[in-house]
Image (cartoon, rainbow, N blue to C red; front, side, top):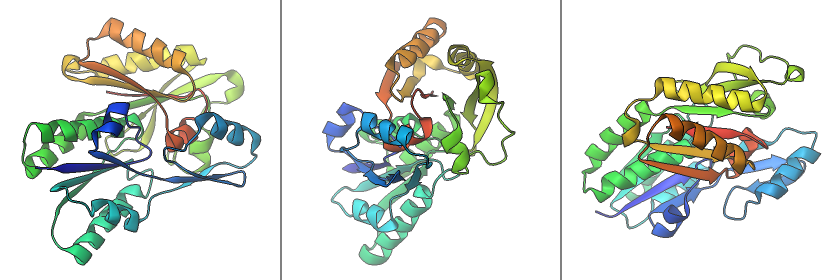
Length: 279
């Protein structure tokens, strides 16, 4: 059976995924400092970070419309999937579901499923990879949904950022206790809840110690690592990503390791120097 996987642009695609013809990006959009930026192949991370640094305003994002998703579903593929960033953090999931409903009203029945990643960034990447893996094994549509939903439940997302300002100002830290003053150079270690919300897992003085503490958290929760892909995304800090990878592969064996630059939405929230790890 033929298939198509639509990933909202908070999820980064590898070069292999881009060239396969099975993946499509549904772009979110960003407004900051008088600039309107579409998070697609034209996104320039370096230029974006300059704009953010020069702007007194906090960047704002908007999700793809239901109509955008509906058009994505309108294709020759027998099975169509959408993977969105956490429904607790964005309207992208609801938009994708509405797009599915619109498609059925307009064009009739089709096998379409929308996955709420309960994650973001490279977490979405791993889920898209898992869908493709299941399709290539010849699993049925219902088997793939069941397998991938179980995979999402087992997935853990962790991150250390230089600043939480964008997350805070855009209301993404709801219910979280006040973070320690940045003047003390205290960096919180953050992670996802099973529902896809953000929680604080710990903190340390300085980024390097926070990254090491994040690695401790990852190892503590890690199960069956040999069957898992270690995925790391970074915003303009490849050396930090390499450092985290080295710390983790010293302590656990993984099926594979993927490191990617953050695309637009992930760069907006991770900010310059942010590291995201999903396993």
